[in-house]
Length: 206
Image (tube, rainbow, N blue to C red; front, side):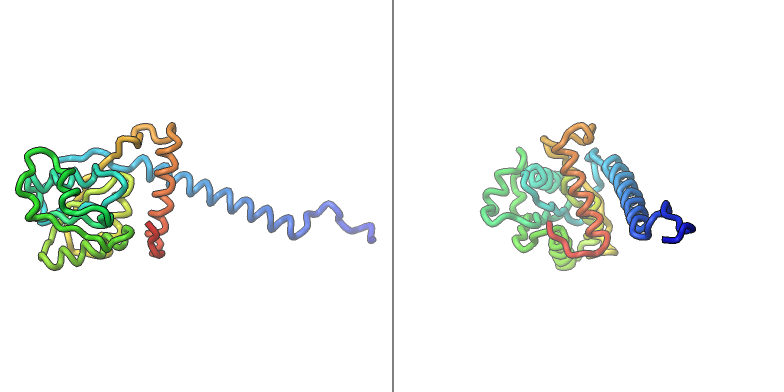
């Protein structure tokens, strides 16, 4: 071994690993920063949205979204209501049981979509429904954390239709202090990942 060889110089693999760790840490920091921005920017206030041609509810595990959509229909915020992604065990009777009081006569203006299985499907089926009825404005009813992704997919499916949102906050979700509750934190983190996934134009899975 030459006495002039620098044995203290870092080896190439160590340098590469250092850059990989630095890049990973930077990526995680950026991911975390924009996740916080995403979570804090979610609109949880359901303002009195202006009337539109139609109303669409993106269904979930809770009946709150459907009840809100039926209430908006009863208040004549739209001419018809589409409930997209209805479960197979639900029908007009079970849906109408979720309607608030003084909602008589709304069954004539209710449409159920059993085809949609995810948010992309919701947007696609809604676009077809809006085209059939020649609707130019829609109110989207969905969970508050789901609004950004729903808007994204709806805008892609119907770029010329005016959209407004009516966010619904589930009873077990604490949006006011989401970082303090593990369930809400996990819910928002999962939705943020799904939003980025959709933003990249990748196939939807929920």
